Every structure is written in structure tokens, then in C-alpha cells.
Length: 147
Ligand SMILES: Nc1ncnc2c1ncn2[C@@H]1O[C@H](COP(=O)(O)OP(=O)(O)OP(=O)(O)O)[C@@H](O)[C@H]1O
Ligand SMILES: [Mg+2]
Image (cartoon, rainbow, N blue to C red; front, side, top):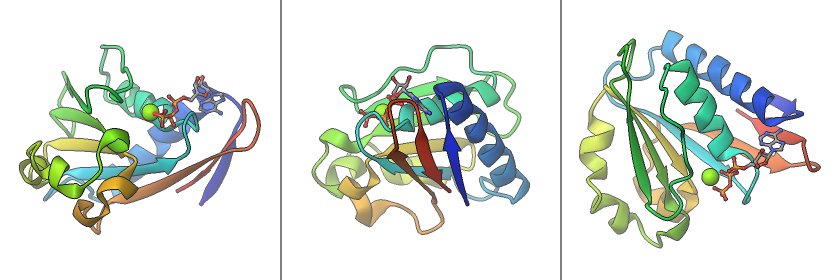
């Protein structure tokens, strides 16, 4: 499916509906639910993660993990997941580096909702069941999101 959002808020609302659909379809029941978020710099990937965090009632501010690679947020109400894990692979150059961060354990737990930006950089370890989302910049405030 495809949507064009006109501001960051709309991208966050789209994230909410994509997550609710994924939960309905049983993503995250056996293994982690993984979102692979692709698109150029500033295309709205982190904005999308903010929408997921809001949906899970995470109160902490979601900041881009570009420099730290990974940030974890605890889900207080634990409706479906206990942690949101946000990884930015922009600065990684091989799947090995992600494995060194404990990737296998992360994707093995159904309690984790994992968001991975720049999955192309670590493509060989992205699970085949990952939900792939593509972001394109149309104009300053418009983003085409394919999901
Ligand atoms: N429709 C829109 N959806 C999402 N973000 C938008 C939209 N319109 C404008 N923006 C702005 O675009 C920027 C998107 O930044 P964001 O950090 O989400 O990008 P990103 O894809 O994660 O980039 P990076 O690869 O650098 O991490 C924000 O400043 C946001 O306010
Ligand atoms: Mg980002």
C-alpha cells in the first residue's frame, strides 16, 4: 500500500495504523516484530518510529540513534511488547557489526518491537518476515510511504 503524508504528525499516525494491523496479523507472537525502514536522509524513518512509540504509550522522547546506533525504550503498559528497540545502521558497514550488538537475541524475543533504519547496510541479517517500509521525499513536507 502507499500513502502520501503532508507533515510529521501524519507519518506518526500512519505508523500507528501499520503497527495495529501488524499486531492484528500476529506479528510479534513468536519472534520479535521487525520494521525495516528504508529511505534517504530526512525521509521520515525516525518520525515513523516516534509514532510507534506513541502508540505503545512510551513517554520518553524518541531521539535518532544515528550516533549511538541503538536506543531502547521500555514499554510501560506491556500491551504487546516490553521493549521498543530502535537501531540506525547508517554507520554500520556489515551485518557482522549488528551481530556483535546481540542482534540474534533481540530478534528471537517476541517481547521486542525492533525498528531498523538503513537495513540495506546489514541486509543479510534482516529476517525475511520483517515488515518493510519505504520512504521517499516528494517535497519539503510531503513523504511517499510504501508499506
Ligand atoms: N510528511 C512528513 N513525514 C515525516 N517527516 C516530515 C514530513 N514533513 C516534514 N518532515 C520533517 O522531515 C524530517 C524527517 O526526519 P527523520 O529524522 O524522521 O528522517 P530519517 O528518515 O530518520 O533520516 P535519517 O536517515 O537521517 O535518520 C523531520 O525534520 C520532520 O519534521
Ligand atoms: Mg532516522
